[in-house]
Image 1: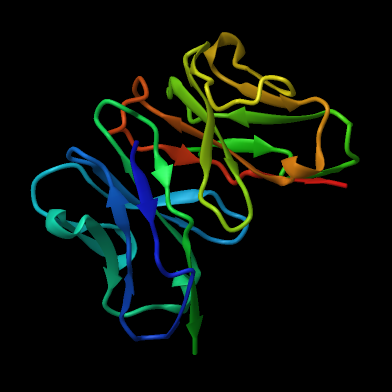
Image 2 (image 1 turned 120 degrees about the vertical axis):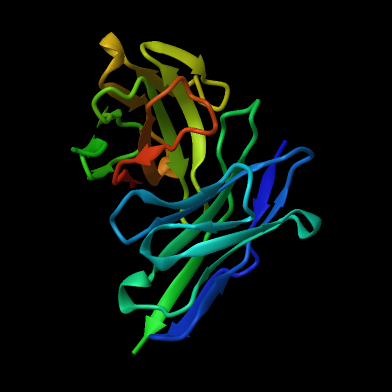
Length: 113
Length: 116
């Protein structure tokens, strides 16, 4: 069964600074990888996904993520953070044969002025 | 386009009382999911429907939880009786195709349940 680890529970970043959120997955075959964002009182919104091809994936809101098979990682990055990026971020993994999304525990991002 | 709609948004009940959550998926989405999200954790799948058929309910605690999706559109998740440990956010999601992992799941805002 697949699983996801998000090592950072909480990250604080200054507005305008860069952001990187870590995600490590465990899965024997080629995974399908996702990053979702959850703002307070809101549902999860898909930021980006990786299925195959180019390992650098562009998403919405200026986010990107890079799939590194050798490190079993799918880290999320944003060059310049805006105050509206304060939210909880979830990494998730699924397989082609198992539709289930397995989520990490999430990373809470706080943006300071 | 309207997103996934859930109601109520918040619910507070006494333990041992019944409670029900309602979900209306995005129009045309034939796959519907119910997730449980405990505080500080990621969502965990409870049940998945393809149209009106529950194709995976292996994670649903059937002694107290039940769900239905009549006519393959709206869905209701019920807990009877509720326990203190059921306090959580219940999320509904839908996707266009038949539940393939490659399909994007669109989530509703969730129902936050507090059991006293």
